[in-house]
Amino acid sequence: MNITIVSVGKLKEKYLKQGIDEYKKRLSAYAKLTLIEVPDEKAPESMSAAEMEEVKRKEGDRILAHITPDTFVITLEIQGNMLTSEQLAKKLDDLATYGKSKIAFIIGGSLGTSKEVESRSDLALSFSKMTFPHQVMRLLLLEQIYRGFRINRGEPYHK
Image: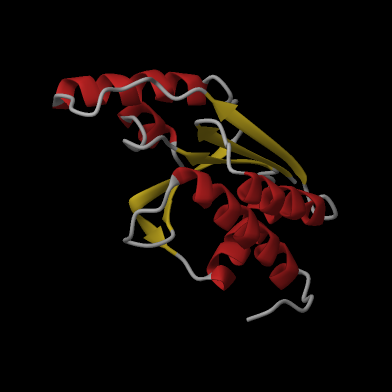
């Protein structure tokens, strides 16, 4: 399985980089993982609704440039579907079973994702109704993907 995570913004925090590197290493036994960072759009503190949409559109164009037509796209959205770890594991297993070996997870910028990215999404996924920094979401997402592979293989993992 080929898993790509496309996220907006550059990861700067050393502790998050270390955690992400650990899960990249762990996941290498299960899937080919590619992490892509697209630049975030510079945005002033106060913007009109139209300016916010323009920022999301520009970031969305950068995201979509990395998505091929045969990729199953999962966007992380606050209003998305909430799944248990077991349900996410089953979704990954079902995708592999039915020939969807290319999966892209999308983590938008601080304003969220554009309408174009959301319309390209095959599944909107929410980790919580709470808002998390998108840099932290990279680590949480990698951990859940890793957990999903462990669940699917019947391998032990902390509950």
